[in-house]
Amino acid sequence: MNGWELSYSGKVRDLYRSADRPGEILMVASDRVSAFDHVLEPGIPGKGKLLTQLSLWWFDRLASVPNHLVSDHTIPGGAASLIPPEFAGRAMLVRTLDMFPIECVVRGYLAGSAWAEYQATAHVCGIELPAGLTFGDRLPHPIFTPAFKAPLGEHDENITFERAAEIVGPDAAESLRTLSLDIYVRAAAIAEARGLILADTKFEFGADPDGTITLADEVLTSDSSRYWDAAAWAAGERKDSFDKQVVRNWLSANWDGAGTPPRLPDDIVALTAARYHELIERLTA
Image (cartoon, rainbow, N blue to C red; front, side, top):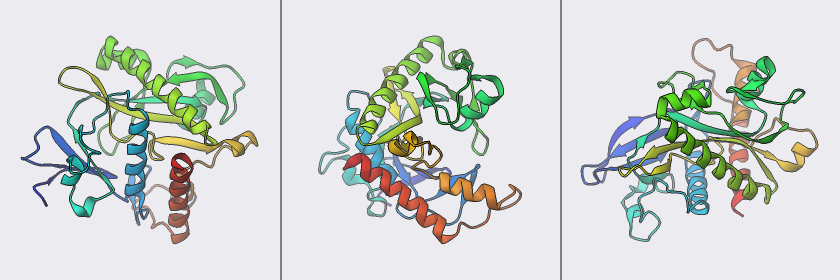
């Protein structure tokens, strides 16, 4: 396949390498969808292309932040021309990096695992939050809540900043926190101008050979971020996000977690695809 050989297959992405392109990886986004650490059937039609398009759109708006795209990725006849036709629209040619083993999560609103932790302890990843918050409330300021990347098939572990510093070193941890918060604030303002709330997101970073901290993987997509409709949020509707939450909700109601997950019904697949489409249309219009 034009010299590219499969190197790694994850839950939703496949990585290819070529002897002709050392130091580079072809990152292919599939239509596979996962929930609760299981890959489900069927996939979401067009999902891989939508996520790739959205990542590239965000990389363009964050051009001042070093990222892992091969430098001539968007130039006609450049690196993008090396992408095999069967992967067109859903692949990125990227540079290999020394990846940091933590996910850099930023939260501007109280939701997801942070909501569960807050209910139990009034803290999130060691950060004390004001009393009396409810699900979906805006936090006084965005917070950096890292997670340790677990082996494939296991849950990532939310950790404190201090633990992150032990894992990657204090200087790197401080740089990752500062950069993550800065990107979140910039992205949240762009989303807000389009009637959307960026409730939370996760970034992944690696180091270039010269040590430059570099934004990697997908960025600010509906698989790595929680977006809400701003008008709906203001009206108190805070649980319908533009992602696979529809899938999670259906699976929670129709599967006890034992054995193989049931096949997703057609209406859930269609509704999930519609949410992905709506987000990218509203952001990029």
